[in-house]
Image (cartoon, rainbow, N blue to C red):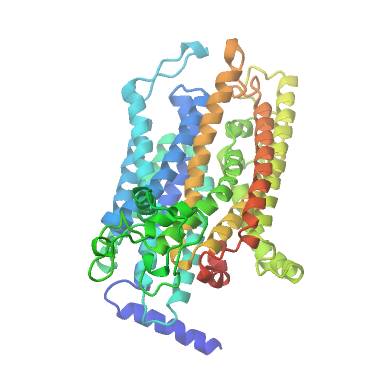
Length: 586
């Protein structure tokens, strides 16, 4: 057995070395490029709210809104970047353009730390002495954010697929195993990069200042671009073949154009346009109005001599209509995770951590921006524990290969998210009372006699909640779609992050505006000892409870059509589900 494995690996390695393009020799260039991009961009985020409030004279609520909008734009552009890559410029150009854009954005951000003219003058002793930010200064910082977002939008969705292009070899019987191994190494490198970003980069910013702290990510992007371009002569550069999202729009447009067709009539199989060798003879009765898109009215006008559609915006295949129906089916369940993602992004949480004792030893103090590591670690540990220990045990009782159904995992994750928000509200109440009792109501920079370990349980619960809910949701989406659409679940998750960031921005703006009416102190005041962040946490708890009730209603509706998260819309999807389990977990 061991000899066979060694022979297979030797064959794969030799095959890659003998190939003029692609193969294993290209993978290090791609992984280093992605790792450096993640390390640089994620290293900027934890402390960014402190930089903006300190040097651009923004209050904490406005800074939180700005950062959430930045995150939302980055995630939305990931979907746009994937679309442009697949439809027009190809993945190589997308990754190259994205990397260069990120570098320019980080250089602009670094320049704001070098030249005082790019920042407003600092505030005086009293807050009303603050100077306003000029249009040029605001445009500079927004330009840097925009360029970094464009870079992330092109690099992140295209990098992993570009690496898979290098290993695609239909003649190799073990090609699927090689690609699966690549996915594992890719995600492992991303995980290590994020860990280093929220620890090492944040530590550099805290102890060596903003010039060095923002200069290091810029140098990492220089390394990222250099390594990626060095490997350029060896890459397989696949031509763009069109995007899945284009097909969804085509179905909607075609169905609208044929809105005059009466879908209540019984059409025979020959009236529907099907792809070659299709197993689907006719569309389902769900969302029947979309069936118009694949009905052939005039074969001479709508079909070419080779049997293909003359205008894909007027006639779509049965498969395209099915995909659109699957998309509409998962939308309600997908929407249930958004509030959980919103609750993860607590505004001003870094200000809480700055007011407590973060020392592990007398010499070492954990940076406030590094506490996100607790969420990452708890997520990773839980996934490993669940997959290796709980799944075999639970499978004996449930009969499901995943231990429990995706619905159950999502529900438990949402419930743990509620507990996490409750804990955050209680912890903030204790912290605020300690600050007031110690006489620090007007001194938000004072460090309390309170350990930062009070905040560990809520961060850990958020990690477990995300591991259960998000992974369960991706597994549910995978079970509905065939293997050829495996990137669709990741795209929906990315879009969910964008929507969550937008909702977070809106929620912070509304709460700050309402609670500061009449000269009152805002719940989200920069001086968190005078504000009421605990009230905001209780508000989040209430919204999460409402979301949990909504989830139960969606489960009841969805389970009537898709028992245990399985779908019959694509017969091959369920067969492939088990073989893809490891990739889903990644």
